Amino acid sequence: MKVTFLGTGTSTGVPQLGCKCEVCSSTDSRDKRLRTSALIEVNGKNIIIDCGPDFYVQMLRNNQFAKLDAALITHIHYDHVGGVDDLRPFCSKEGFPFYCTADVSSDLHKHIPYCFEAHPYPGVPHFDLRIIKPYEKFKLYDTDITPLQVMHAKLPILGFKIGEHLAYITDAKTIPLKTIDEIRGIDTLILNALRIEPHHSHLDLEEALDIVEEIKPKRTFFIHLSHDMGLHKEVSRILPENVFLAYDGLQIEI
Image (cartoon, rainbow, N blue to C red; front, side):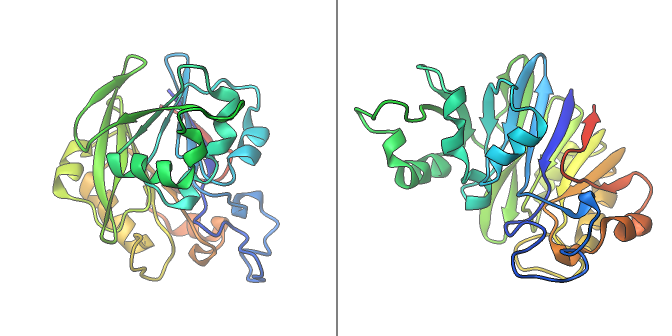
């Protein structure tokens, strides 16, 4: 299994428009962060986790010729679904497989109704929405996928356990014990860590490190980072062993 971090930034991206802080002014490519998304390559198939407003650019930067086979969606916020219209080149007559909760499906029908009309105009993206629920495991291309519930402030959203060795969690503020038990001791944990200072709906760095200590993965990569996290090179120096800041374009093997 291979993971490509298509984007590792928060909803504003990094640099943040109009900001001249040292992170937003950095020339280090690792400090340039598009909205959070990942590409999972497993068993010859390509699965994306979330499809935000930077999806088009992300695919051009990474592998514009890749064939995408399915999407796993964590929640309906724009920075995670704002690019779904750009999936149209990957849509077949049967529809692009799109795994999400019932509430996300309902919201998509409201936000992009032209995709779900009885008689859509030619060329419109066609999605095969497949409803999933927390902890109800399903198979996707011979790989076990377990949706994991986490809380984005008061909003329940999904993380994913993919196979037996990868867990992907973004936008969490609190993580239920059932989810922690499901991924305790996992090989690779991908987890959000917004910034140094506390935030009402996202894990801050200290809280994220506490989660890592509880789960005890072999290695962890932090995502959904804001400019308030600090410079990649400086924050990396203070992280524990086997805990890393992910960055756009990073690829890891699992």
